[in-house]
Length: 326
Ligand SMILES: NC(=O)c1ccc[n+]([C@@H]2O[C@H](COP(=O)([O-])OP(=O)(O)OC[C@H]3O[C@@H](n4cnc5c(N)ncnc54)[C@H](OP(=O)(O)O)[C@@H]3O)[C@@H](O)[C@H]2O)c1
Image 1 (cartoon, rainbow, N blue to C red):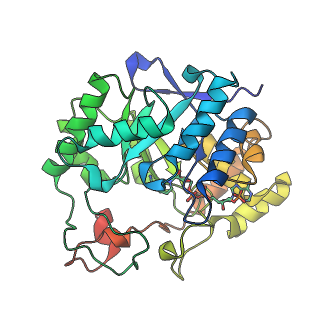
Image 2: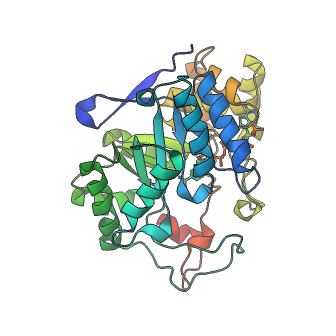
């Protein structure tokens, strides 16, 4: 059985391990829950141990059946898995975080989560399928007190033993600066967009400095992301000349170069894949990139954010950059 290298999380006195690569489960409105659950089952049979789920992906109940199967047939023990889920933006209110966690646990057929995240740092949400330009009248900018009221509920879930660690997603340095001093239980990880065309050097280094594990979403540049998340200026990581050149030198797909880069840099990539999950896992075990190749990718950063989050903007906001404190 493949032994995937692990990283140590800053929880439980440094005794908690997390695999250096995981599997994403957002079907991007294109893949059915059954397709995603089948990849999860096949992935765990192949050696994946970290699965990145979320209530809003609408497939946790189907993934739960797959998890139940691999646990029941002894493919894997529960303590060998690292399961992440996230509370959606419409469940930040008093008492709602517990309800959301309970629903996720029921759907995933688990007694506890290894990590529970606040998916976005505000309660703004939108009806499924709305256009990117639509604005919810209830949407508002980030408010520290509002976020902390959600975080207090996350901390309580740790006290209750329902989740082993808590984390945040889609944060910025200014937002982290405003909430970290107020946290009784600090986030063990921050999940954010990370790929060769969007390396977020400052935020990444900030996490390293604070001993917070960076988890990188869209590690391949999310080629199958929903149309609402695409703009003409987007740069595709797998089409960057530097990535293609390195892929040719190693005789591998450019997507695999993105994953090797992520793991060697130190973030945990969580690629989504229905068709290539085996090679994505194998790639961290063999044929590493050279330090010259790592350096070449570092210099190729395009500062190109793909997941802009326009649908979460409030009515008076003029530009998606406001969401990211730019
Ligand atoms: N926290 C957040 O707000 C947030 C936001 C976005 C995403 N996420 C998480 O991050 C995960 C990953 O992001 P993502 O799904 O948007 O994008 P991604 O992992 O960057 O890209 C997935 C796409 O890459 C293709 N691919 C994967 N491996 C490949 C390979 N070796 N060769 C060629 N193509 C390959 C897949 O196609 P095949 O299926 O054909 O392999 C799939 O279409 C999500 O599933 C989700 O769990 C979190």
